[in-house]
Every structure is written in structure tokens, then in C-alpha cells.
Length: 254
Image 1 (cartoon, rainbow, N blue to C red):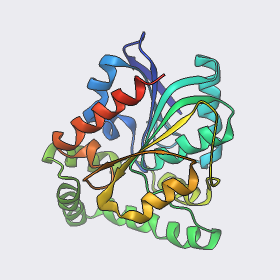
Image 2: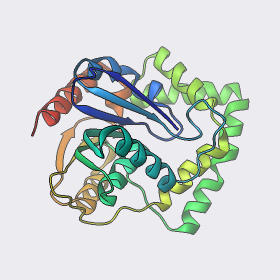
Image 3: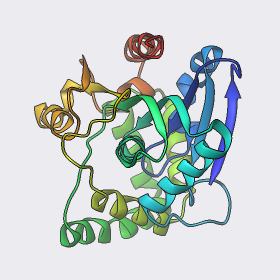
């Protein structure tokens, strides 16, 4: 595990939790500088994605390590935490387990997929051969890069960095991360006193995700944006700027 602290060290604490098969350096690259001007950032890279000789085990063991860090360095309390995609699963676990306290859990347009063991096994079984084929095949790399550019409206530099990042990780870690996320369920109607769950709802994902947010959390604060999944982190400023303004609004709340 890797924890790096940066930004305004006298500002409110804000943890950044990246998505599947990514590190914080690429996942949050576009927003590290503006967020760091205001907040004390705690940036996380999970086992298997931290640049060391580690392997991702499962969601709950990684969650425990995050909790231990928050307890040791911040007396068990954070002002806020942002999860990108799979990172939102960690935010949800940190809130519902109540081993530490987060005032504002910010869910960055997640899917929050959950499944049974057989379905998770079947889906994850396809991950390793796909990753290996992708890494070895330049044509597939180029096709995937073009799809990323089209879906997220990424520029060439961002797409190249994302592809390089993805290609650098062990397929076994990616498979474990994907499989474990599907099996690590959130409870329904989660409520923790003095914690607010904020959802960045990318409406191009579809209303079924909106229903999930309301299912898992009691009275969530849902903010709708006309964009795709996590497009605010990878697309143009027309997506990034309004979401950053929303984060400031959230973090200014008591």
C-alpha cells in the first residue's frame, strides 16, 4: 500500500481513492493541482498498484489497511474522501463499517456493481486473458486508446498515460481487484450520524445507477451531471470544472 500526503497541509483532509487497474497519479492527474491548493490530500495506491512487489488480495483487507492509516495519522477522522469508480466501493465500506469517521463521502459516478460468487468468478475469469492479450497486441492497444478518447473525450496525452498505466500492472492483481469488488457488498439504507453520502450522478450511465445510490444510502445528496462515467476526471474542462466547484461546496459544509 502507498499513502502520499500533499497539497495544503493546513486545509481540510481529503482522501483520493482510485478506480480499477489504476493508480492515483493517473486517475486524479487532472484534479490533483486544483484540489491540492485547498485541501490536505491523502492519495492512496492499493496493494498491486503501488509500484512495489505486492499483490492485490481482497477489498476488505485493503479497507482495513486504509482504516489503520486513518486511525494512526488522523485519529480516525477525515473531512472527506473521494472514490473514483471502484474507489467509491472503498468509500462505501469505510462509511458502513464505522471503524473510522468520514464527514463527506463523495462517490464519483460509480456503478457499485455487486454479484454472487458464480457470476463474479465467471466475469473475473475473462479478465486475465483480456489483459494479457491487450498488453501483447499493439493493434488492440491502439483500438482501446481510440475507444477511451471517444468515450471520455480524452486527449491523446491522457489516453496514452492511461494505457501505459493499465499495461504496467500484474493481470492477477487486476483480476483479484475486479472479482473482490463484485463480492464485497454494501448494505442497504446505510446511515451514519454526521456523515453525508454525496453522489456525482453521470446521467448518461442510466437511471438504474441512480436507483442503486438511493438503495444503498439513506437520503443521499445526489448531484446530476450530463456526462459519462467518471468523465469529469478524464474529459474536458466542461466536465471537470463544475464537479470541482461542487466538491468545494461539499467540503465547505460543516
